[in-house]
Image (cartoon, rainbow, N blue to C red; front, side, top):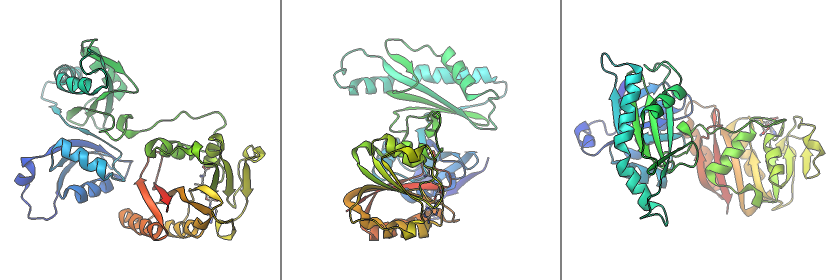
Length: 379
Ligand SMILES: C[S@@+](CC[C@H](N)C(=O)[O-])C[C@H]1O[C@@H](n2cnc3c(N)ncnc32)[C@H](O)[C@@H]1O
């Protein structure tokens, strides 16, 4: 495992950082953890990190308390950090330890570790401050490819749950809608565990891996990106009425917007799914987006998911912004074809800001591959 200090300024002593620090298991989309690490370094000035799963999962020590870290991440969300949880226990594999013995130790942590957060959560549940109410707890387990635990993460979860005996009046094990999450990461030679709320973890999904059911006849997986944007950014798509979809073929995003009750104008030189073309609320313009024209303020939503040069795509979208009503929303993906994605994103954000777009959030969603999603409002 390669452990490295990322310092800036270089001469800053490590001891200073260790005075008040917290440790986290941080996860990004595959290949993007170096960018999450860079964002964390820019936010916290310095950090210590150890790769647990190449390109994806890191053990990070930050020079701030857990509460300070969470506050900072809530006020200035990072683009590439998909999920994190606080490390409250590191259970190292000792000589003679069996995998089942490790599961037992995690269960012990769970048995001991829940009384304080349980009381805190219980006292924060409206109307239930004094009532004895069972806290809903989800157990989320992941493992690295090289973990000492050779079985699946699900098997490890079963083993832990089988050895954990929470008081039923205190803790109710759930899969969704948890008050608290017990997060477990089984690495090569240690298990990391922590208890936190789903919102502190940035996602209520295990590792931030948002799963949607593939539907019968679904046109493209791209639809998942908008579904995820809807939840992650809290965009109420059904409240819009007229959408422009640029680079729409084969029609995953268009079908999603039609389902939400919008009328959609789809622009793409490529073919749309023939089934969609039967929908009376769809206008399909089989053209390149640089050769279309609309009325001023014709749309209240603009979406663009074009597989093209990110800067040229941004230019093209900006040239069509006259058709978006002031106060209208735009959701666009930025393909990260560059070796310096953070610099590229900054440049593109500046292009949009100069074009009177307020950037509400920029984030790499779980369903974004080599891209991020920008959520903006025109002012
Ligand atoms: C990733 S696909 C879009 C997938 C779509 N969002 C969906 O949900 O099915 C990218 C599309 O961008 C289109 N495209 C690329 N350059 C374009 C341009 N200049 N004008 C319009 N569409 C373009 C391509 O033809 C392609 O269909």
